[in-house]
Amino acid sequence: MTSFGKSAQIPEWVLSKMKQYCAYQERCMFDVKEKLKTFHLQEDVYESIILKLKKEDYLNEERFAKVYASGKLRINHWGKNKIYAALQQKRVPELFILEGLTDIDDEYMSVLHQVIAKKNNELKESDINRRNKKLAKFAISKGFESNLVWDVLNYKD
Image (cartoon, rainbow, N blue to C red; front, side, top):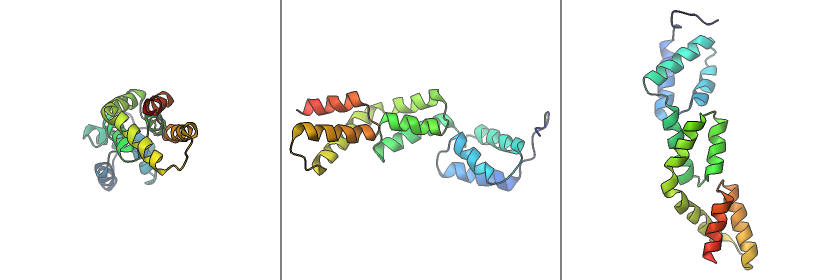
């Protein structure tokens, strides 16, 4: 039952654990809520903790979306489609997802070229059309937009 007028009593040890959890790496609200469920507390306590984490800037979904998108591009070599879907699964607001994706624009094409070049070196296919289809299929499966993939592949010809 939610209490109105007064804030829920937050166990200090839980708040401390959640601050550590958020300080270790950027988190989104979905991840924080999932972690809070492991403590088996009342719903209003969860909301109070989340509000406190937001107020003290431990939890910031805009920052999370930017860091997540950047990391997935640079480390995992994911394209925007795959990053977008992953952020949607984590229930990050659309506006923050789009900001995160915009933030990676500068290095995006460079990573796409790297992904295609690396896969190209691994392929044993001698027929150029089959090679390009395999390269395109691979890059698209990594979340890169098909029109960009084909632009890169057709430019190489």
